[in-house]
Image (cartoon, rainbow, N blue to C red; front, side):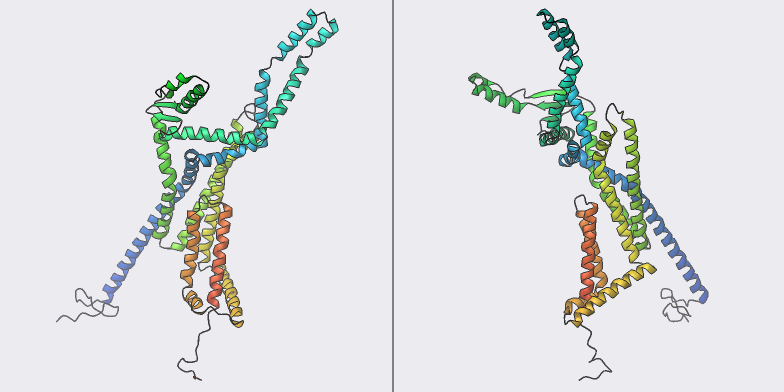
Length: 450
């Protein structure tokens, strides 16, 4: 006779599938196999989370640099914003003043002027002492010319006119290059196959109108054909355009892929909170690597630029200006990573974490008690907040994280602002929850009802 199936519990139950009574040895073997399966499953999750973590850490600095390069190459406004400070940097202004002064002075043949003066004086019977003195005027005259030219050039370079000219020239140049690389046919410089062409249609229209206005009526018959001028042909143009398209894809999607891999690593790992801490600290370390690499590259760059080409202070200003947004992004990523790791730690069982949570809880309870003693309670709202404390805390922190994700190029200041707002909201909700009405126990069983 086969025993009736019973619950498969330790202590002589039966298998609900076969109806066979489970012995103690069989149950022990079942538990051993189950634990072995759990261990294998846990190891597989650890391995998968480790692989995803490594990919996240490898892609994090690449995503940071790719985003920066993408902004500089494909965003004219961002590029102009990057190079604009160079026009007002004193070291760069000094270089521009010196180079422009040298070019202007080079066009003035001081030696020829003094030679002509000497010849004229001698031909007109000037005393020998005067003629000899005229020959020695070359150096003082050159110095005087340079002083006058340098003063006027400096007046222009240090004015707002130079700043506006600098930004306008960079904007036009960047727009022209961007139009060529993207294959856009709307700009003045455009690409057609392997040919780069300049559209002079606007110039033709202006010249034709001015000739008509000046009385040359036949100029109105100037045809609209041949409105482009071929600048150059290159077989590398298609490759440059392909590189631009690749950069557009990488700069847009590589940060998204990195963030997704990091989130997937946290989800796959058996211990989510610990993996959040590890991932955040690892990404923060990668941000430090980027900052250190910038310091090394700065030193290499300054050592590679000859002082005769560009003075060290001007070269440093150029490098620092061009990479300042990348440096700021790395610092922001470092701060966000540290804050994320700290938040995950404060949610854990550590002694310091428990102490901080206890201190915050006592502070909120004290403030809520003070409000109740003053006759102010939060009613159903406070009761709901108290019953859903973990949920409201998670939503608040998630909203802060989402704000940073959606923020267009957040800075350390933006992170600090979001952090303060999150802390304020958490404190307010905790106080509101603590100020809920005290539970009424008078009508519970065992209590007298008045």
